[in-house]
Image 1 (cartoon, rainbow, N blue to C red):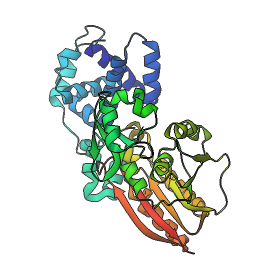
Image 2: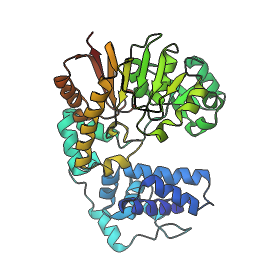
Image 3: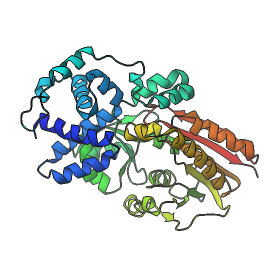
Image 4: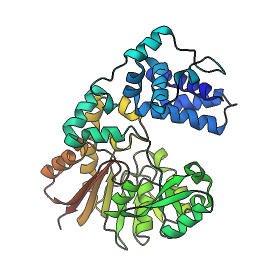
Length: 389
């Protein structure tokens, strides 16, 4: 595919997104219909689409033109690509710019909140919850997320893992303050087929997510429950950090939990997957990685910030309060409850915890940490709560 044809494909997908279709579904359908497109073509189209979703308002404002065509043109402008190199009608590329479109480009102005690249109501939430950090956080969400690996220290040292990856031309560097993390700086797309990954020596996991697990005071023999385990990334990180802990994983969605069995086998981790919802107070540590807006990870899933609605955010807060309360009943006296989200919003983090503490006097706050983007990875929040004896 020519660069122009890649942009034409991205325009088709962006139009479908603006019409309400999920971006991943649109990309998959496009790839199935266009089997001539090679892996590099698919990756390039995907990059254009996701860069555009991260910068939807800004790219539209740059071009002054609506719909996918205008957003894709904004992508060209931001990338320093001359419009007539792409919008020329050649090689299945987009049609040339009309006179009206050229006039729109000349008259284009940025709206006041374009740098936020958020729906207007959500920009207001960012300002309210993040204060002076709102602008910088929203700006960071416009960039591509780094690719980080977690070294399975139960199998290999970080230094040896870096050498093994380098032998397959995957170059990495350590992440300051996170001893298990390697930041991939070259050939990230080779990871899934590499020997260190296939042998369970490394896993894809954001550096801040790893740092969150390092906050846990894991001990040998502890009964540890990952209450909203999902695919089990944090479960496996805990297993590597303290292989002698007794780990249990549960998720309300069996489909999300299912891949953990194979992942644990590859990592050499001992994890018991629970098939029914736990109800007894028999765990020394319960990790609640709660359902959330995902605002700290919108670089990876930029569709989330455009699909979230005010009532959806309120519903998430209610779910978080409920899940935290349910999980608190599973902790033994003297045990620990750890609440975490991949959100940067106070209303999903400190406000939920404060509400919980006001109605659960048996718990006290031990310590907490908020990770803004690039400190050292995605945006996360974690708080450790101690249950009285």
